[in-house]
Amino acid sequence: MNTEFMKLPFWFLYTRATHRMSEDKVKEGYNREAGKYIYEINNIYHKQALMRFKQYKEVLSRYNFNSLLDVGAGEFTTISYLAKKFGKNKRYAGLELANKKVELGKEYCKKNGVKVEAYTGTATKLPFKDNEFDIVMTSHCLEQMPFTYKKAIDEMLRVTNKVLILFEPSAKYGSFYQKYRMFCLNYALGISNYLKYDDIYGLDIKDSNRTFVHIFEKQMNIGA
Image (cartoon, rainbow, N blue to C red; front, side):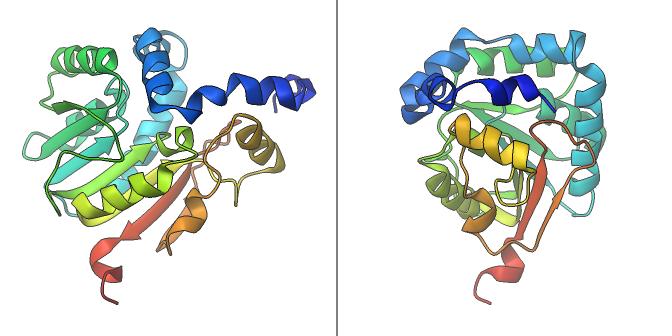
């Protein structure tokens, strides 16, 4: 546990997190740090990232699907890995708010020899038709949207045909430290409560911002 984080005054941490109050500020910040994800995965957190991606693949492997959309795809590191593992006979797409990250994501996918459709846009207004993708997923995207995550989830449900899978932290099921961290950083706190999920559980990687898998099977729930 990062105890140094807990020694910082709440007002200091919250002030640093006020950028989440504006989508424009979030976009500006992400464009400013473009390239960080790819660098860290290649040079610092390669082992941890690979463990996380493998567990994502295990979750998705439960389902028979032909199309996959990653909302908040960052620099397309996650969707690139999944596209490589699941093979070419499927449709893969990634959507990201920051245009510079999208451009880096395109290059990253090309270098990895995978075909992924790349879109620049917001999770609260997805440029896709109803039920267009068999699976829609996020990976630590909604945590950054404390004021609009509900609208984003509604949009993802709209374009999902089979199942929505949210790989996000949980203020409900996380440790005390994770709850404290999410509160101080102004993360979305209600993700685990918003839908009546079919399953919620934590991944085996227990870091300071543990990932919880939130699964909502649309065809089993809509109209039930």
